Amino acid sequence: MTTVESKTEGEASRRAPLKARLLSRAMRTKPLFQTALWTQMPLLAMVSPRVLELNAERCTVEIPFNWRNRNIFGSMYFAASMMAAEATTGGLVFFHDAKRPDAFSYIVKGVSADFVDKAQSDVTFECRQGEVIAEAFAEAAGKKSSVERTLEVVGWREDGTEVARVKVDWWWRAK
Image (cartoon, rainbow, N blue to C red):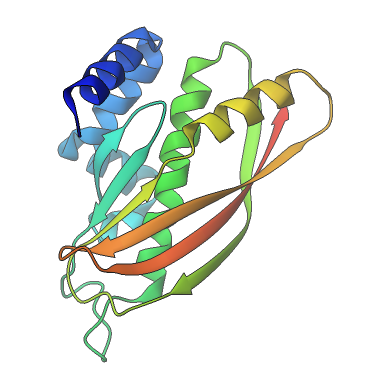
């Protein structure tokens, strides 16, 4: 990452409303995030994901490879990977929702995935479609009908090998 990109991302996060900045900070603070997961999503909490980055442009979630999510073939259960991939898009959706003053309903409508290689180490999932989410919220706010978007998440192992491409279909509607 160049210095110019770092400066731009820093400025963008400072311009985000306080609620969105606090959400990002809380999700990147492991004890706070784990507490929220255990109370709201205990199944996801079992695999101990960690939010590495959350801002208006992207969300990055790491899932450790350990005894809780390892199958009999020595790789990560696909369900653990799918939870982390969905959490990556969900983090971005929550961030953009926190930036808006009006209320919305949103839900995952579908998921599809291509598993390219075995996940035999920690896996990092990243979604870089913050702009698509911002546009979906803006479009949903401007009309009475629902809006649908497909968000793509890419997962890779510690050595940089891509292990999965996941597409998560989201649905939005203004309340």
